[in-house]
Length: 169
Image (cartoon, rainbow, N blue to C red; front, side, top):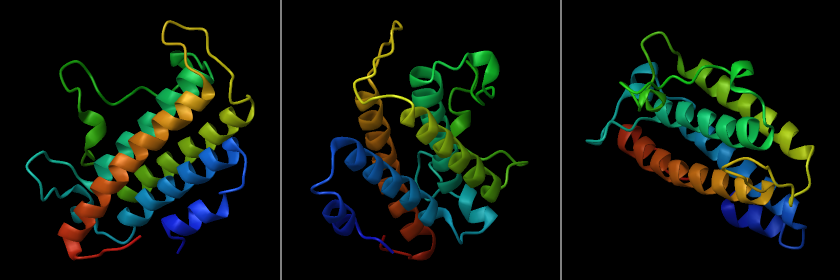
């Protein structure tokens, strides 16, 4: 298991892109590690009043990846992308597992989206800027997804500890 300090040390002299990719991949893996080994019931269980749960965090992060890299950086038309689970009536549907969803499938969808994000990012320089109303540079998108993933990795740490006492990276 790679610890955060080891990750930092491994790329301290690396270029900006390698640093961004390494940290993001570490966080992506950390979120998945926190969810592996829990039951389907525990993947849905929320020990906090907000309803936050491990499966929902991973499902949400899949859509963060898709929105950031596929939609914004890759400029893939919405018609060619999966339909998001949320609606105006249910804006938080990406934060929970539905009865027909299994944790392993949600993890696989997240990992596939991460793979697509890597492929899209590899096609562009860090200063590549998207010319849309929400115009973004690739570096900005890396930072945005790192922040979002880190935030939810922290949530996953706490949830897993509350579920079964598991702690650590």
